[in-house]
Amino acid sequence: MKKLKVNDEVFVTTGKNAGKVGKIVSLNRKTNKVTVDGVNEVKRATKPSQANPEGGFVTKNLPIDSSNVSLISPKTKKPTKVKFVVGKDNKKARTSKKCGAVI
Image 1 (cartoon, rainbow, N blue to C red):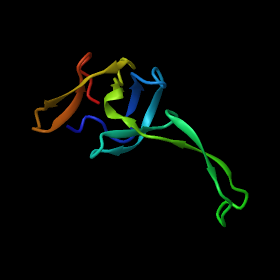
Image 2 (tube, rainbow, N blue to C red; image 1 turned 90 degrees about the vertical axis):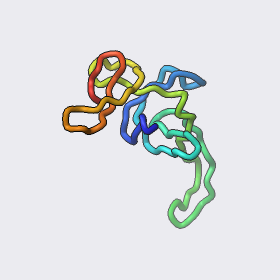
Image 3 (tube, one colour; image 1 turned 90 degrees about the horizontal axis):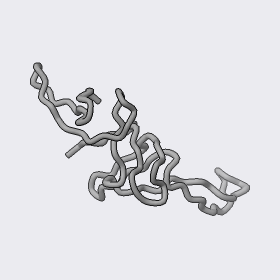
Image 4 (tube, rainbow, N blue to C red; image 1 turned 180 degrees about the vertical axis):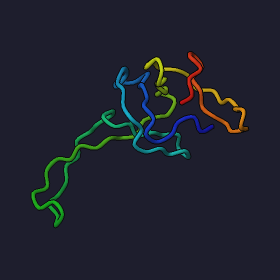
């Protein structure tokens, strides 16, 4: 199911980053991983190159499993589950299970 999309605001529920909030930067549906901005950051050493002549450390966001995040409702600003509702115009829309707001 495509309940999560890029630029959705999510809440991290488990792991060392539990309680953090961020936006989804990338999504890998084959491995069920999401990369969230500001969550699961690591520093990587880089060698000097033409693009970066000094080298040094670069901060990267590593992906986390999509089951460890939950979508934030735009109305209540709290984590919620997602359900699909077919509207009057026969289009499927993602809605919040708690408050019924369209996401």
